[in-house]
Amino acid sequence: MVAVTVIAMWAHPRAVSTAFLRMMLERGDVTVVHEPLVTLADWHELTMPALDGDGTVTVHDADAVLAHLAALGRDRTVFFKDTLEYRHQHLFDHPEQVADMVHTFIVRDPAKAIASHYAMKPTVTCPEIGFEHQWDLFELARRVTGRTPLVIRSEELTTDPAGAVSRYCARVGLPFLPHALRWRPEDRPEWHRTRQWHVDASASSGFAPIARSYGATVDNDARLRAFHDHHLPFYQRLIAHAS
Image (cartoon, rainbow, N blue to C red; front, side, top):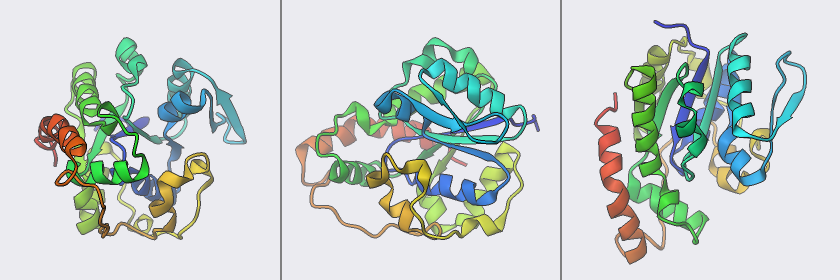
């Protein structure tokens, strides 16, 4: 197993990725960074842990984000998750900055993810659904690292959390810590700026099936159906590599 310094989890929006990050926070043995690139895109600045572990630093561009993640990883394993409503072109323009990362991807049934996304953001556009961006980045990661990235389904997390997380840990070189599968519900400071997107994660105490119905779905809304038809092939390509 190659020594791990930075583990990336790339998600489309509404993929249960924040709950996964909450579990990683509960571990206590990795440095966790929440959505660095999408935060930078939306807010034009990002607060990250300082290298000495005391305090924070603020960065203002993608180059600085990736360089700081790499620097953090020299002392302690880093886990970050990011969402791909944007393509994050910097990654494609500077692939050398992600060549040493361990790349993982999380996907959810597109019909459910799209309905959930639309309920949160009725102005969502087709590219923001994110599966196409995920597939493009999957191919980039496979090319620059020479390894096929790990893909996990959010449904596996909610039906067999111990099995799904233990398999994930084995693939990325982390010990499986069963205690991290349960946590205290809380509104974490990591997602204060975007807390409306993380209500479920804040209220959660572990991975659990999501029981929710939506008024607009891919079955009754032509716009959402078009989104689904566009992104389904990319989802299918990704889950072909699911463990």
